[in-house]
Length: 482
Image 1 (cartoon, rainbow, N blue to C red):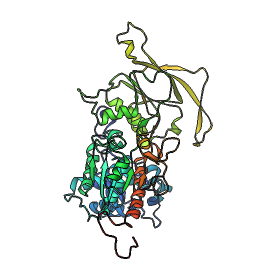
Image 2 (cartoon, one colour; image 1 turned 180 degrees about the vertical axis):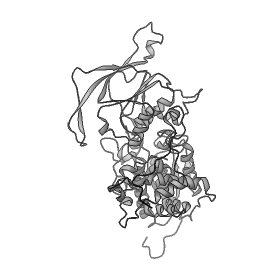
Image 3 (cartoon, rainbow, N blue to C red; image 1 turned 90 degrees about the horizontal axis):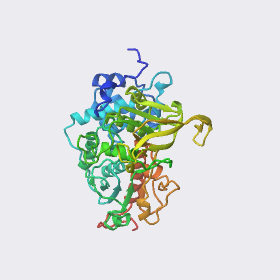
Image 4 (cartoon, rainbow, N blue to C red; image 1 turned 120 degrees about the vertical axis):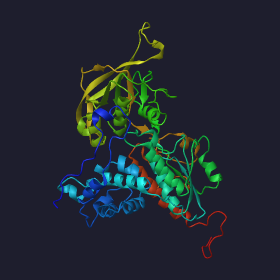
């Protein structure tokens, strides 16, 4: 059979339908399509795709098992390296990682590795009857701060080695950014809950509503008998532009906007934590979070949604798939534009109380691209005399986040960089003995898969350190020298 030069398309809801619901946009491969897509893999000897995966999944092996219709076997291969396969198959930027290294991609479209991973994980979740088993305990205890992708990965890898792991989550639901940051139409919350449940089946304890740095400190975790602490608390501190009008009602950080919708169910008719619905919404930024916020605003009933981004489409950092989905749904991209002021009601006779300061518009200036900046992208430069006003009722700032300073301010000896990220070595070890960190708490906002990779690195380092020591209450082995 001739090799298909193109990867199989992902079935999706029609744009005119999905723009009005929160159901998952991508519908997933059928078994038949998955086998056909797997058949495109060349099973290269040097396996470049594996090197492109931050968690080093044995990609050719799991794809080979799909070719053989051994879908459960494929899942077992993936799960040896990844604690969150159903998540990664949906939200990882495979096009710039494993798929970008695919040999087939030199001449044709690369193998749809991410789509196959999603298929395998979904097949397992729909068909597996056996629960994950907790391995024999080794007597050591580790605390994990945060239940996002880095924390869950670290917890899963350590649990498989027999460590008793307790995950402490500040919010009332486990999953971190996977539940509060990524919308249901991209990552259904039931999938995240299922992945968390698998970790619990392996013996991981999850404690919610515990804010480390407030409810408990890192020092107190050690006092409780934990021998190592991994900090995967993410980057939940939103950035703003520091322009006039950002304190007006109707101005949200993307964190607040998405958390209210995703976690607090603000899309319901009678929400406990309401959010502005309808009207005209501007989302400032060009990353995946901006796409998520814009598409969420549309589904909440906005009559018009703008993406306002200071560079051109070529520099837009969001995944191409997310950009294309947003365009198909009718999101209006205002590129080479930058906000300079958010405008609000001033007329005392207005139908809404001016003291409440509601948004009425956003003043912007057009930009042009100049010389490259430190990131290698051409620097946007304002065009004199090009200001205009965008008529909007709400503004969502999606221009990045920083690590929350709470843990740093309550933990002695923990060094951070000028952006607030925790400083770690190549093993994820911080300046504080026994304390490791990874993910957005270290790097600032980044991808789910890079956070997972950091969690794996730290888990390996914690294991190397603790397995040399007797577990609490155990006598040292004879000849250990301790």
